[in-house]
Image 1 (cartoon, rainbow, N blue to C red):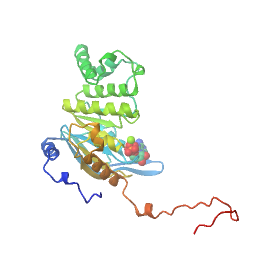
Image 2: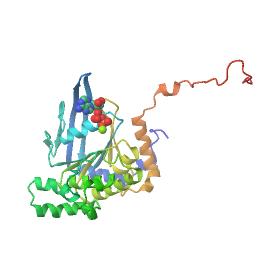
Image 3: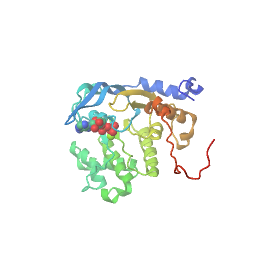
Image 4: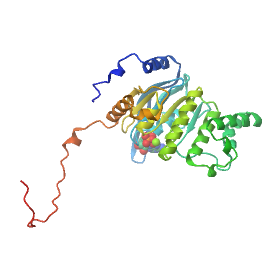
Length: 302
Ligand SMILES: Nc1ncnc2c1ncn2[C@@H]1O[C@H](COP(=O)(O)OP(=O)(O)O)[C@@H](O)[C@H]1O
Ligand SMILES: [Mg+2]
């Protein structure tokens, strides 16, 4: 099936369509306008992001995919206020972003917990820093720790936890500050497949139950389709928006859907966007290797 032959379910009035109509009526949390980012390096200027434009609605789950080096981390760091745009702007609730703030929670691929603090103290950290009393911070921290399923480990230290558990704490810590948006940069990229699947399901469960907008970076197509309402596809370097596609897979999502027609059609569309077929690939000659020396007793091939 090529992308011209859209499957019939995409044309029909269906619950997925209605979900998108409702989603678009919600307020805009994040708006990225004509964003460009260039880095000056010893080898000259590198364009990491080029004319990026998109909007994210309240409680939307947006995934960003694109090949390695296309500017995904630069984009999310700019949204977080860790990098400043070369031109253009990032608006959160209509206000320009200049620096990191508690309205944006971050979860990175690398583990970023304070190793000298327990799980509970790690989650309390931001709450106490923002002026909550110790008792309030502790109560709230325990609720978030319960939400990510780690109540039994509240007094453990990060080195006593598995990779997946550390990322659960990182999610609890980011959410405890009640951000408007959760920014996640390949948070499950270092986990084994089984743990990763559990983390994805847990994240979807959390997202369904609280008022949070999520922008999630991944280079795994299955992960993006399983999680997202819409997927922002970045072109290969320099990062430029290729397309923002709607994921027509119904919610709630289940692993059984990985082989559904909607899922596979979306995956094919993404593959076409990320790896457009080039004429060059098809015209590559096959390399013939002659295994026998000339003069050997080899039967001639007709
Ligand atoms: N601090 C920096 N200084 C110079 N170049 C950078 C810096 N950060 C990223 N880049 C360059 O910007 C491009 C995009 O990088 P990045 O955002 O990390 O991509 P991705 O996360 O998609 O793999 C790459 O060419 C990278 O080398
Ligand atoms: Mg990256």
